[in-house]
Length: 442
Ligand code: ARG
Figure 1 (cartoon, rainbow, N blue to C red):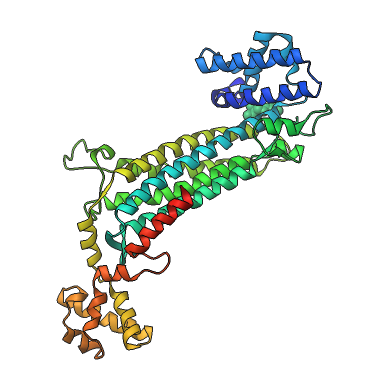
Figure 2: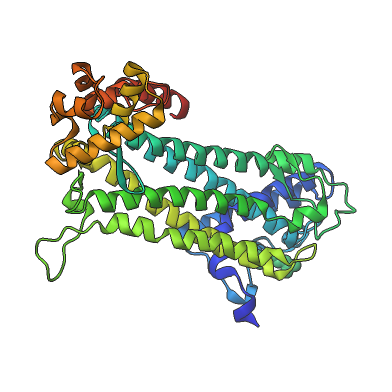
């Protein structure tokens, strides 16, 4: 029974929140006259000593005391005697654990926001430095149109910005304090829930005592925010894996972020990026685990809910690790600007620019222009040259109206430079977007 029942092995992580919750509760009990001032002072002083013991590492966590709540209270009783037994008046472990865990998750939200912001800073610095580095943009992983490296990185700044929005929304939704809901029905004592909510940094108490002890939406919000952010990290990690490969050679990671092979001396494997991608599986699994744990539970508290903590604690550690590694890799990578430019010039990436020119200058319908361009790409392909090396005569053989002016759009720099629409990839736009993103996010 003890082995399946005890949670102290992991919920000791809630010690600081548990002590803060108990101090707020004791202070409130004294303020409304349920506890004498002397008892409350003894409790507050004792809780500080417990906190010290935990901080010093001298506190003995006991499995037979099941969880952090009972461990703290039992030690308090050893330290101060009888008044310790009065602390649990007008509360239950059900509202206590909901409060502790919610406080912890709120801290985790704030840490996640900071880690996401640090990654945005690294991306923005690289985007600024390489606002004009042309590279291939892909659809279907086939070369599509030239873009800039800065523009590509700014796409991730947007993703992590939305992740931070979700974090803020999660914080706003978790701003209600469950303490005082007691076991499930509320308390017959004249408690002041506004006071405890305020003391613990919540905006207000929760409105329904049954919901208070059954609700773990704050943990789901946290895991869902992490899951989406982890998917973004994973996509970026996948790009690093591709970009650092011999086939691409777009980016160099310093040795500090790669590993060698025990048998192949030439290898520089992007293990940190692969692990950032790989660990996403755990994060997605944690969200799924908690959703499934909660889905069949009748109101109110069931012990199943003790299973809420480990997925959240593990996810917090994983996210901190993965975001730190990703931030370091982005900060320390060097794009190979020449290789990026060469790759952008392959594969007829300016074909769309040619079609657009035919529409703009010769007033061809876009479908016709698309067809003419397709014929010219085939011609260039058969001659083994890029589009801008077809002669004017060759161009005219397919569409007689084409003139010298077309060459101004066939180069990759012209292509990238022309895409100056809001949100577009022209270097000038990208520089503006970096400035705008800094003021939106930092
Ligand atoms: N260790 C429990 C948990 O984490 C605390 C709440 C216990 N409540 C109860 N009625 N047994 O959920």
